[in-house]
Length: 386
Image (cartoon, rainbow, N blue to C red; front, side, top):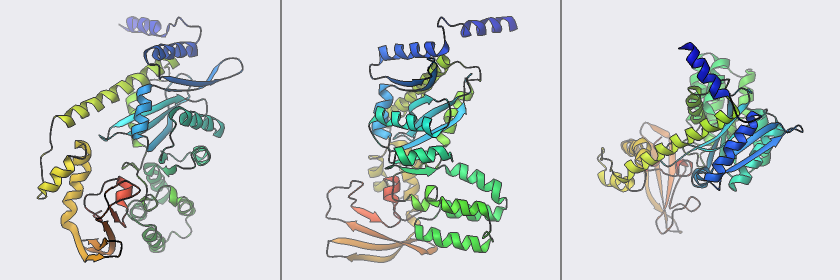
């Protein structure tokens, strides 16, 4: 049996091409024959050795146009015989499923390589993302500021939490830190409570906390309430992709095998999307709260996954809302309300309702809440209920 496996492995690695890179490019040319919108870009050494490569098919281009507002960039998984980082550009669709926009294999993690990669990504897609999520790679941070100046850069909260566990160690300090970076809705609340945390747990001389405070606008929730993030705070979707690769890719994986396996994963994700779409078109969620009419109306707008995961949760919070001030009409015909969450009167919010407006775009909302959840999620069934 062992001899059989060795023979099969030998046959698998036997290639009719002179080099692995030639085989990969030939595979991509075959994809171009099937898909005229398939794109492959690469750089090479002077001796014609493949250095960096980037590829995207037509379906991925369309996906990015539809769902590319928030982009996750991950380059941590080295999955091939050359020990080079596999880069995945990942996002989420309207069923909360993961999608791959593009893939690349790069030679190193320098600013020069990242600059080429992001320019290639933008040239191929023709659209700037609204937000980019990455780990704490300093070279990537600098390149994003230069190449994608209009995109908001957010650091992965999971990596921040992992570093906090290493540096703070105390459970009391960790809880206070996580509360500050994850919970508070406004910058003013964050600044006040950060200072209270520093005083209460005595972190005045902590160097790491000082560094984190300087980066606070890159990861703290209070600084991202005004931008749509598709409910993403971390690069965990990429970690899920890496887990998929882990089962089928090893250090001995050749370049041509890697390209084929990425394409296979793309097909799997697209199958999941088609399955979700079929379920959404041929079923209807059951009402589970006392606000049946509101649920029926919301379920007709949102996909089942978004409705079950977020909208129902928001509707259930209705019972925790306290109206502090009734409608107060202004000269522009808007109505202003003051509300707060039960047992949290110190965190009140102002809701402005423009009942005369006929449109409800992201730039011209009919209803605006000071908690900014309309902008952050692009939906908010019950205001100020976090």
